[in-house]
Image (cartoon, rainbow, N blue to C red; front, side):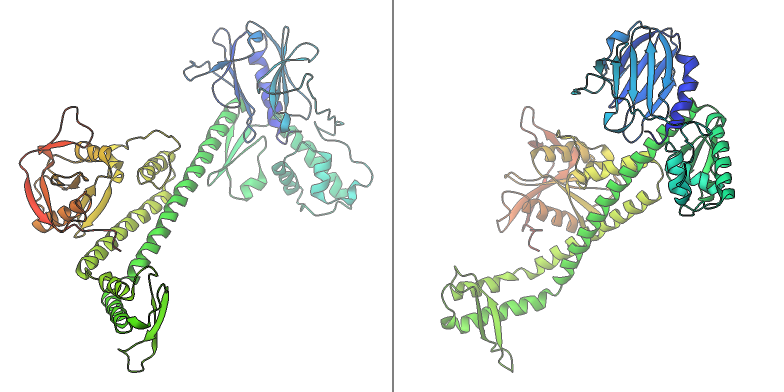
Length: 551
């Protein structure tokens, strides 16, 4: 049983004149669950889909086969179509040829396309791994009342609610059709038909409704991305805000419905994927900023750490060997209360004290890193919110695809492909680590040899400033200029040099020489590994590495 039987019936009738006496040239498939039957003499092609969510059957002009395809049902080549019919009340189309029958079953777990002989013995199937040898029919027959697939009312039915009664009388009606009939009868779903006048009104509406299903135009109803196709002008849909578009030809309306429905479905899938990725990243950034906010009182933290170190030294003889935590008298408090101090059980009391002294040793540098991280997180948060707003406002799938490409480049969405894909120029910047200096200078840092090569020779403009720790392996670093004539302050170059030092093999050294020059003076070395370069017109700075991971 198919709940949209009537549209298949209308289409089968509409296709009869186009298909009968036409010769089949070829049957093939180029996409999942779709069979294409090409007719000779450029008559056109029949497209049949047995998709569970969106089955269809329509006729289109003959198209060139460009996609990868597989030929099927070779027995039908050269066969003339004699008839197309639909099994009453079932989503089961049969195309008769001179020798064979092509059965298209759109319903249930048996959805498939079967090629059979005259006795319906199965010769071939569209979906493989089927064990059937004889075709299964639904064997559902209905008495005529007063239109197709509606049976007569029997005694006792009047005791059922209106919706249940209508479903029993006309089982081929889908939910929307049931609502429409009840709306036209001014009946609620649970209302009882306990008097003759109500029953007579229902029978009259059903009779008129069935005539409309067989002879009326086709309607496409749309509301905020939701699409419905009907063979009737729907009072219920229009009452609920759907706007109709009228089509006279079911063979034109149906492809339009399928195309738009696929578009809406793809839009929704993209929208949900993008929104989920952006909201997840927004949540991560909020947590990161909250964590940084907790680290802002570094002076107090340093004071507490130094105090714990001094207390440990004062009472080192009272610290048990191998202890993970100890409670000692706070000699810096007037009350003299005890203070709990966590310990490394593998260290002595003096060594644990030194750990506390060293914890905030580089206070100035840690503050600098804190400010840089905060600015980077805030900038990314602003970008993520802008993308969320853009996603919410757009109604075009192409714009969503561009946003998705950016999120793939940002590593917020995982690409299905296993091969490494270099992003487009506009998204290339997300391939590298980024640090924002003084709220305006973007500094990009390579992640590995190939990434260094990409940064220097694909992303950097020739007037950007390029940096690298001298004489040791490390990341390429680029300071981007917005305009060629911009002059980068010396302080910015020094900070970027410290980042280059921290991203090199010399990151643990006290002072590191870092060379810098314009990117145009950096060249690949022929036949050398990626990231290996020759540099001209360079200058050298001696800097302390700036470790961004210390907070």
